[in-house]
Length: 67
Image (cartoon, rainbow, N blue to C red):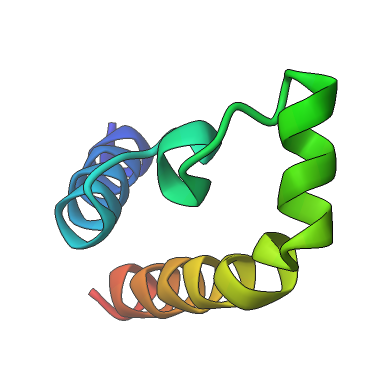
């Protein structure tokens, strides 16, 4: 039960900070669509945005594990 609670808190905090949990929303394009995926790659969206999302996730996990 404690693990499930921490997962819920993690998801709520991540979404509160970034507005969504879904990659399409985080990146601003539908990466399932091959054309949009290529646009995301050509625009370096993965290199520009994803490290920030991973950093947020790591900090949230670190904080939750300390509690």
